[in-house]
Length: 260
Image (cartoon, rainbow, N blue to C red):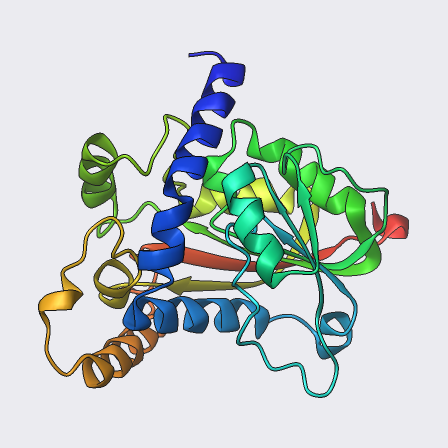
């Protein structure tokens, strides 16, 4: 399949699943709380100064990533971008500024944003390197980027292959990055500041009820939700186990022009 056809297929998939994101993935309380934890973890690595600036939610989906984020007395200045019309329609309800566009060719001038937030984006793109280059272009000189993406590990490789074959949530573009591959991709344009592996038990049980919803059968959901997140946070600190996660968060800084 050509890259053009792959892109078209990805857009079709994203348009199709927008409702399930709205009503299931971010509609079921336990999944929503886990998604909020995951977003908050990403943003915890961004400097407070840049959080007061302009933020690009790159691949914003239905636009709810920043709904529960506390920025003190100052409202977050967020612009959401997504390639799927159905996602953008829903995002426009939540984000004052939304743009329909391709994350590989960002429709913005240079040096527009203090933060670029890319959550579960790169593994959907035909050429993620183009997105990395354009994120660098639209960031201001002291800008920061934070990514969360797939991690091909002992835990995740086989389940992801099975789900991808059987599910309607994935186009042919869907990748499962190895951590070294993703780090090399991002470090081609950025300085890597922090790497955080996350998602061991909580990720498959809580995060994707629109794909598989095992957690609905578990009683005392609030108790087990908090417990699973704490267990995952503990695993992320164990040297030999932590890299065997489902996901990886990478926080990076724009390299100053004088150092390029």
